[in-house]
Length: 129
Image (tube, rainbow, N blue to C red; front, top):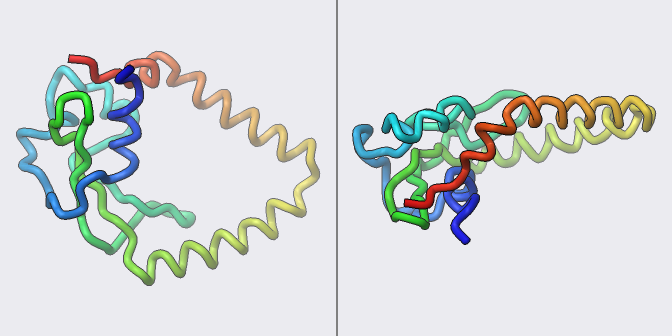
């Protein structure tokens, strides 16, 4: 089954050596896949989150395994980005661990609510030709 494979490809670069694809050929730029933009994808996407989106590493193109077409490009982390992200994750864990369980549960519920608001678009993550 081909469901969600391209979505995973959009998140995990499959061809590090492929380089950035021409903008006109990216699925994210095609009207048929306009819903990808509703999920926040652009032609080039930052691939690191450590309190803010960024990335100073190599740009790689992600490909849809259903049709082998390029979806979008992702800027990977540099070594410095990685080290900063690990440091910030450890700091965030200390803060998260001090939050009472009921409050953490409320935060997780809000995340679920945000996902449910995009349920129709997320349900479109099917690149069957």
